[in-house]
Image (cartoon, rainbow, N blue to C red; front, side, top):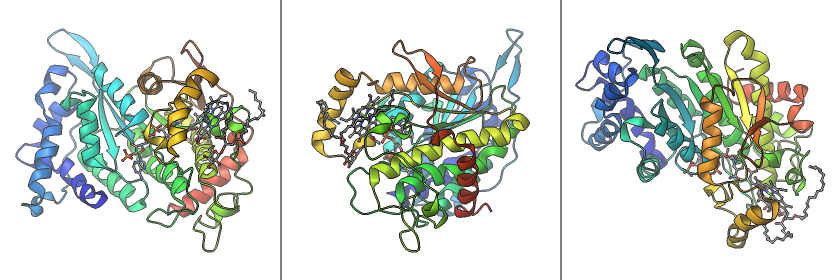
Length: 399
Ligand code: LMG
Ligand code: NDP
Ligand code: PMR
C-alpha cells in the first residue's frame, strides 16, 4: 500500500499541468471566493489522475510550473470589500483521529484548504468522504514520515504545486505499547521517535522557507504534544515515564546496532519511546520559537488536546485496554475528550485569532477554554532542546 500510494503523490499535483493552464487552475485553487473555489474539483482530479497512472506513466513526471499565487488579501470587486483568501494548512496523519477531526473542522469553516499528508492514500480518501468533507476543501498527498526520502518527496511535490503554505500541523504518530522488540524506519531509526519526532523535524525544517514566504497574516507551525510526556502531571507519572537522559541513544542513531534504540540509551520500551518522542515534539516547538519566531513572525505552538481515548493510537494495545480505557478516562480521570471536540481544539490553535502567541503549550480546562499550560522540567529544558535539535539535524542529513 505504501508503495502504491507513493506513486500517487506526484500525480496528485501533476493534474495541474494536464489540460489546464497554471493560471486558470491557480485562480480556482487559491482564489478568495468560495464560489470560485468550488468550481475547481481538485480532489476528483487527484482520483482521476490516479486511475490514469497505470496507463499513462509518462504523464506523471512532475514538471515545475509557473507559480501564480493570489495575495492573502484580495479586493472583492463585486462587493467592494477586502477579503482574506483561503488559508492552506498541511496536516500530517489526517486519515484518522485528531488529524481527521481537525481537517473536518477547518474544512467546514470554508476558510481553509486542507492538505491531508497521509501514508495511506485510499484510507485518507475514504476517511475524508465519510467525514463529509466537501471534495474541493481538501487534497490528499502521500507522506510516510517513517522514511526521510518520502518526507523529501512530499516537500518537493508541495513546492512544485505552487501552493502557498500558511500553517503546518505535525500531528501523525505511532504508539507501540506492546512491542517487545523495536522496529525501525526506512532509515534505521527506532519507529516511534523516528516517525513522531525525526520525520516531523525534517518536514518542518524543509517547509519553514515556504511558510516564511507566505503572505498569510498569521502563519503557524504546530506540533502535537501530550500530557503523558510531562512528569509534572499524574498522567506523566504512570510508568514507564518519559526520560531522555543524556541523549546517548539519539546521538548513536537509535538503531540498536552501535547504540540503543532508546534516546536515553536504555532497554527498548515502546510506551516510553512514544512518551520520549512527545517530549522531543514539545522541545522542538520551543527551539523553533527561540530560533525563528522573531525573524519570521511565525507562531510556534504545541498542545495537549485532551485524552482522545477512542482513536487509532491505541490500535496495538491489548483488547482489554481498548475496552476499558475510554470509560476509565470518561468516568475516573475525567480527562476524556471526543475526537470532534479535540479536532475543534486543534483547529483553534490553527486559526483562532486569540491563539497567536508563540512558544506556548496549549491545554483546555473542564469548560473547554484554552490556557497556556506549564511543561515539565525536562520538556522545557532549553539546553536539551538545543542538543536534540543539533543531533536530529545530523540524523536527518541537515548538518
Ligand atoms: C504500562 O503499564 C505497560 O506495561 C506498557 O506496556 C504500556 O502499555 C504502558 O503507559 C503505557 O503502561 C502501566 C500500568 C501500570 O498501568 C495499567 O494499565 C495498570 C492498570 C491498573 C488499574 C489500576 C486501577 C485503576 C482504577 C480502576 C479503574 C477501572 C478501569 C480500568 C482501566 C484501566 C486502563 C488503564 O501502572 C502502574 O504501575 C499503576 C501505578 C499507577 C501510578 C500512578 C501514578 C502515581 C504518581 C504519583 C505521583 C504524582 C506526582 C505528580 C503530581 C502532579 C499533580 C498534578
Ligand atoms: P491516530 O492513530 O488516530 O492518528 C495517527 C495518524 O498518524 C494516522 O492518520 C496515521 O495514519 C498517521 N501515521 C502514523 N504513522 C505515520 C507515518 N509513518 N506517516 C504518515 N502518517 C502516519 O491517533 P490520534 O489521532 O490519537 O493521534 C494524533 C496525535 O495526537 C498524535 O500526535 C498523538 O501523539 C496525539 N495525542 C493523542 C492523544 C490521544 O489521547 N489519542 C492524547 C495526546 C496527544 P494511518 O491512518 O495510515 O494509520
Ligand atoms: Mg493515562 C489523571 C489523569 C490521567 C490522564 C489525563 C491520562 C491521560 N491518564 C491519566 C491517569 C492514568 N492513566 C492513571 C491513574 C493510570 C493508571 C491506571 C493510567 C494508565 C494509562 C495507560 C496504561 N494511561 C495511558 C495508558 C496508555 O497506554 C496511554 C499512554 O500512555 O499512551 C502513551 C495512556 C494515556 N493516559 C492519558 C493519555 C492522554 C494517554 C494517551 C495518549 C498520549 O499521551 O498521547
